[in-house]
Length: 211
Image (tube, rainbow, N blue to C red; front, side):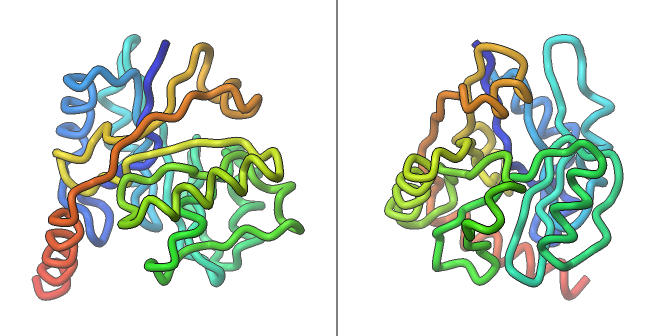
């Protein structure tokens, strides 16, 4: 069984702090089989982390893209996403054989939440039903209930911005990850992050703005 954290931020995010090499090192120590680097609006962190991939550990290049309707994650990317229109972003992800993931879809405490609409289900490869940084568990519960109701593929991730968060949530695959995700054959695991991490993130964003 292989464990993956599918939502992690490196220093290449505007609110990130961790070196990609340190992310991989930590993920290995915590028994993960792989990790997705999903920096805000860039794949630079994923490209850097990919250098530390080996036969026992997979690095997935991703990005959490800011669109006109909220954030969308692309996994298995090889090029930057240039559009800001949500439908065009999903098209760009698909054009490079990537997977479209909707993160924290019911977290109303985040301004950048993308709210899934039935008309767009055809684009989705996964709905994040557990995000460690959802302050209230009810948002994760709503996402899982929604995925169950409409038979949408499920995924999960820590949304880590700091070392102590890596591996807090993710998926367990019995087969190749992409295949398991597409066939909705993943087991979800996770625990919520400390509220202190949210506060530290605000400090990092403020610091990055002034330097």
